Image 1 (tube, helix red, strand yellow):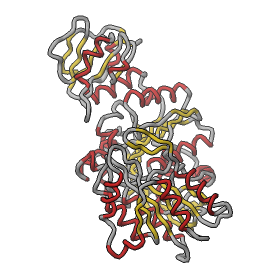
Image 2: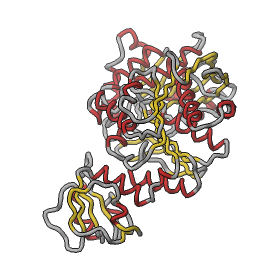
Image 3: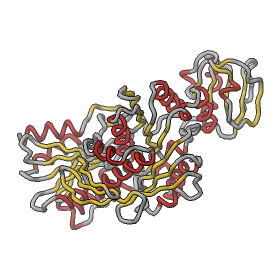
Image 4: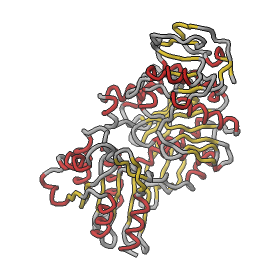
Length: 488
């Protein structure tokens, strides 16, 4: 139980009807889960307006409501707190409810189109491997030390975030490494978090179904850096021109990493193979089991954050050399005798797909075929569909377009929209197979000794979302099974 006035510390109130000196049992944004003597925050969401559920919350016994617009009829005994921005208020209130955990643990936020999961997860593994208790909030996993909790969104809701940070702080975690999505920033899910540092990886074509314009997408990412304090650090990839945009007007100390230009953390690729990378960051060389230029950037970001957090450079690189690829990120799947190399990657944007195919192109001998299986998700930015197909067919020897997570859309329509991006000279090497399992099976059957198969788009996901139902589906396991069946 906490006093309402303490929960509201730092919340900008426009009007108070009632008082704030009562004990609150719980905090909620979902009227279906409210508890007696709780506080309900009515959010104006993109699909549902929480103000419509205030009567339901009151029926279930809440005694305080945070809202942007007062209900027409007020209930006696219920305290109403009017704010301009309920999402912002929820983040601050959640932080207070859980005793401001980000003041007790250093939270590092990682944002960008690609690389967030790899950077956050590798940082977590780096410090955990050195017996420094840490937490992870990511697309793939939420971890409090080694205790795993289900991850359903890249950036969870504000209450969940603060609860997890509280658990991390209570378990003695020194750091929390957190992916921060543009949606999470725009929807103020990270309000109330005091970030000790932030990383910008890159930005490219994605989420325009939500942000509408690329400028809005950039501005959403920039919110993370705009909110940093003068005690925090901002580490940005300056090979991406938007890296410098991110740190415009930030109060934080700004640092850079880059592969192509001068930077505080300059990385050079000395060797690039399917087995890993030999890198030089500043004056130190090390071998990594990760592959490709995009991972050179990710590793430079990891090294930079570790350095800024005071870790020993040599020890950092020693541990980094032992860490493998993050699940579903350029993950290698070999056939029984290694006759065919299978790769699974989460690449679901044109830029990410191009990066993965470019990396394969730099390593391969050209004496083998590169077969790419790729689809596009439903209910997402439609403009990237033809671009994904164009890139795949330009950079591969054979392409199979297939279903990804169609969600509520017709998968056949999605495939047709992808096919529009295939240029005339590449149509002969492009097939469309709606069933994703059959598409992977066909790719394996087409492969000969030495060939490379890339299955892109879903990566770590263990399901396929069709009309709101998540059916079990694991690209890694299916590719492994087919390879061992056809190329034992």
